[in-house]
Length: 423
Image (cartoon, rainbow, N blue to C red):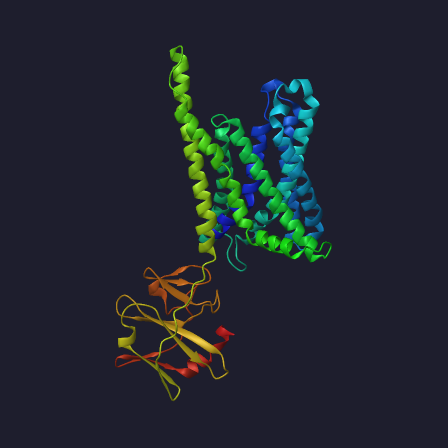
């Protein structure tokens, strides 16, 4: 679930923020007074989204196995329209003021915005769409708790990106215009760097362009910090956050009449709330894309194998070594040279759970103990302690053993016969 969440969140943030930013910067008129070109940005998103779905489907079915064939021209479009939309935002105030006098100029700006949105969406969303193909692991039933958790992570990731963009949008009327414009310009600049980094990587790999050492090192740094650029796209909105909160305190609840006083009070409350909620969104996304990503990449290390007695084809483990109720891991080298592991744990009621450190579903990934639970390293499923020693599900593969006067006795021939589980 967490992997789905952070991956989808990172993939959908850029188009969500760009759409929100251009809607704020280029919005004019209401109702019939709204120009038709204002809907071009929505059309741009729909076209980009539809293209992303088609591209993802072609990749999933291996119809397209060379992504560079599509990504190369797409990235050129992204870079060009990033520059163009930067200029549009830079002059957005002039374009939208008295726009009836230069309607064609506004139409051009909306067209550029639509192309930029389409290109960015098409570039960002195929990898997000492909996450839909891993909801169900091969061989698993369709409807399982794991599938539902993955689906929930996918939905929450997309919703978080959209909600964050909508929260930032609330500052359009509470922050000073220049502060919001500055944040949007920085957002577009970061998008340009991200797109240019991907394009330069292709140019370098195809040997179309040879970068000097300093430029190559800068390219490597950008490649290794793509996720940090996404975080920076969110953090740039700290500028209108600060401006909104300042305005919330700066405007005095006073005026010529009660209506004006009430409007000032409402503005103060709205400005503080917009800034505060935007700050919460920034902190939450930063936390998700740092700590959350780190958790998904955390490697579980299995505890080292313990010593035991091995003599004349018999493995012996004393009760005193395994009576603490914790997971104990042991290692054995089979006759065919395969290094095997098996585990023993004392269960409630005094019985012992004995089995291979492997299962039929997840192979030899192994198990680890966390918060009193035995968990499969591969699928993160907590194993019911009472079922260890029995076949089924993700349980450790059971095998025969004997209990003799304070010790567990295992015939090594039994382990030899199960070595294929570790091959």
